[in-house]
Image (cartoon, rainbow, N blue to C red):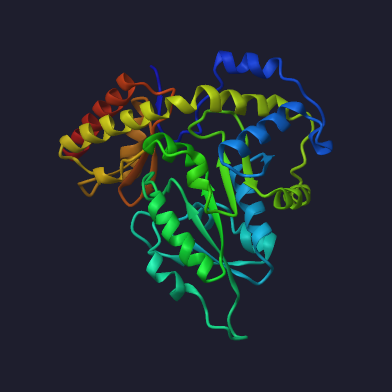
Length: 346
């Protein structure tokens, strides 16, 4: 039985063409900045995002933590959205690695209210921490893949600068925001001091993220990457997959958004699930069973019938669509889930 795995867009596997690219990749020692494929990838991504330079790292967590370290000092406070990846899924790394604390701000759809930015800043008083950085996540995972609109980013950036805050964008899925809106990556990135982007989610590379910023910041980032044990050697092997993914899979992201909408609408029409269809802007669908069911039983029963997704809260589940899930599979997944939900309801 074919498994339809929609737990995450990280479950993609390298295609045959990507494997061929990996096999013939030109490599060198990246710690010496001598891997030509890594250098090409870094220059390419920096150009796409309109920044001076980039650094290739092994993961999105490392990319975010390098960015936070660059833009803060120990003891600083960093403003993050309450459901952000940096707070929920990075194992307390800001405190461990940079000696900083996170201030969580609850929002609708992951979007800060620009009019309230000033209220997040403590008075200039020795009792309070220095607030030095504001982070945004685009697209926003725990809000269902919602896009932070460019007009909001610009308003928030203006207020942040007024309050002497630096800005970081956790852009792990920034590719999705660009694909959905047609807005250039460089326009989304322009207001930020640092931006992290991931290659191993929707783009389908097996590993890797990048940080883009100024040349000076990226020079400092190389040192902190070394501190983290992130110096890599003949890493052009995986950098080649990243280049291939951007050039060949980035154009396919709009299709994954369409499949997510088809899935969501079919689930909603069944009357068995609650879905905020306005949040299905990209490739993520959050759905909630309308009955008081046993969530583990429901999810495991779906897995027995070859549909895999993850639990995201009390009776809330997440499905994430990627380029290796086609329209037929998206609709079949909805059919299977609906059938099992009906049986459990009975």
